Image: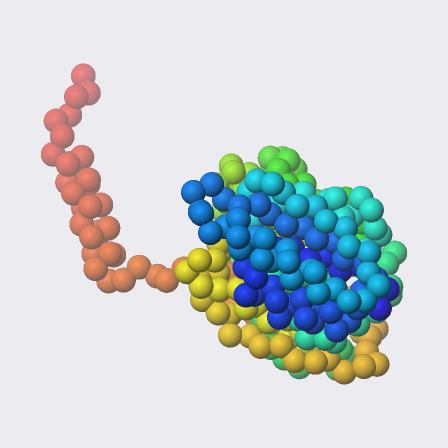
Length: 312
């Protein structure tokens, strides 16, 4: 293995340890450590952050370890965004693993091969290890999607240069129209995407991955997705920032040599599945809610009818 690996960590040594063991088995020549600091008001954070960093002491192969450790808590969004910008200022490509994303060993070879194959192909922006379908029926080892799976992935500095944490371009009405047209196959998905992008622009969500997803949409770039799921998301529970329940998608190994698709085109069937899985439609109003809404509407109408006519 010759590709650098980025390990993103915080205060969860119980998750990081099995993830690190998978990295250890691959023996990358370089590891970039992006670590967030303890939160104010959480007395156990300092010790847990220290325990996470101590796991790196078991590196027993020739490896250049470069660390960026924040002394204070930056939060999920700023910590990962600034850390990846720091990494891609130094290397042309990298494989990124968060402390709660447990990869199959074949994930690293898969990423490494595709990083080389699509190094100069600007149509491809990222390589994902996560397949929400667990296994997708196709003739090739992977396919392409408009969407970005954030649980274990890889990319290039030439792609990361399009990342903008503040999503400045989203303020341009022409950009909104362009993305709406790009996602025209599913109006509900665009509406959900727009609502989310609006929240991020307003600073109401602490995240980084949807800004990266926005960069994919803005440049009309694609992600390469393995036909089997290569990464298990193990970071869920009440103390987790975003994921309270398991996705239930386990990992498995991919076969080599890889079968490469003949064209860089979107698998529309998978994208339709992905939208329903990752962006489920909100439950419809129940009958009681609908009746109450109709009652309020009726009261407003009756009030208007009973108002005296003030016209001269």
